[in-house]
Image (cartoon, rainbow, N blue to C red):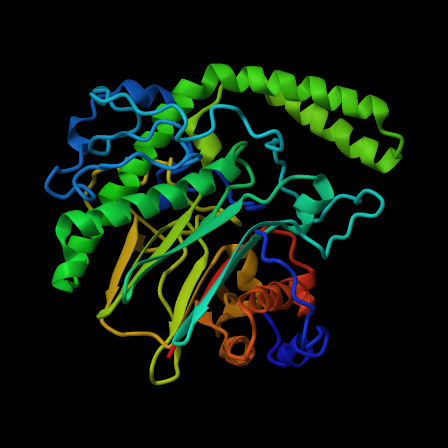
Length: 466
């Protein structure tokens, strides 16, 4: 837990007027075997893909936006975005009537996609590697006279050290005046393609939510759903996303092995030319991991990633999530409040992801950390500020671990007001969008001792409204 006086260091260790830099744009150590209600949420059986899925089929009346009408953007992930209604369980037995387009998700494997082996402490970095200067996978910063939104997804120190790209992602979209969508996704460090999984989660959720609003006419009607309505829609959206990932994993399995064989050949050539002994050691380690996994078939769980989303409306907030991370807001009465309970398992860093078995129909309903999967809320209150983040940011921003009267640790799950009030004051300064993004990254990355000790990838969206 962060000491209360840390905020003094927060704004003294970093410059108050950073030089503006272009806003150019994770390592989740989540256990892949979390067990909500003693069920194995992260070890979905590959043999289940041929099971009868009739019981898990989303009700067509409740399906998100009924069915996707438009073509998805390039890199939507999973390369085959269905034109028709979202599919049912893991790998649906009934294939879509309309064949998806091939370029929705890159058919070719990203050259920088590598196996990850999460570590508690970064390995010795190569010469000239700056652990405090992460790659920015994505930076978002927009502002108008009444609000601003700033977000980032940056590489963790363990990933900088190991040469692994950031596996977090986020998305922001203004859907209509007063209607804004915020999404974050944290890729599992144990999953080979979690960077693609987190991007897929954000882009698919954005598409499905947009189509839901169009189909239901919520914007035109200025309609605020009940919590049950919202839960049904989110359940079907997340289930549709899962089904797309399963189908794509099956379709891309053959080309995945070919791409990894090509990656291995390129890596061996790079090792031959490398003269830096430290860097050569890292490349040899990557080669070892690549060889160990090259014959392991691509599966849906290789895309494991969490999701947190908020739909801000003129009448309040609609939230949903699967997995860990944090989300909260500052109310009009000045209180900072949490909006989700992280889904955590019995083991450290254990959680649940979109491609897992959270959707199984059962009584009582599937829960983890004593909350439903997915956890969905309807809050009839407009915020002064909001925040969504991956768990890489929580140690300096949230009250997460407190000892009770019996000496046991528990999670109070409260935003740390001593952090967010100075942060809000700093972000409210007269800054350009680029300066505001740089400043937020600087504060989270190196503004505190806890931030400088954080090895995980980090994603945060912070927004304030007048």
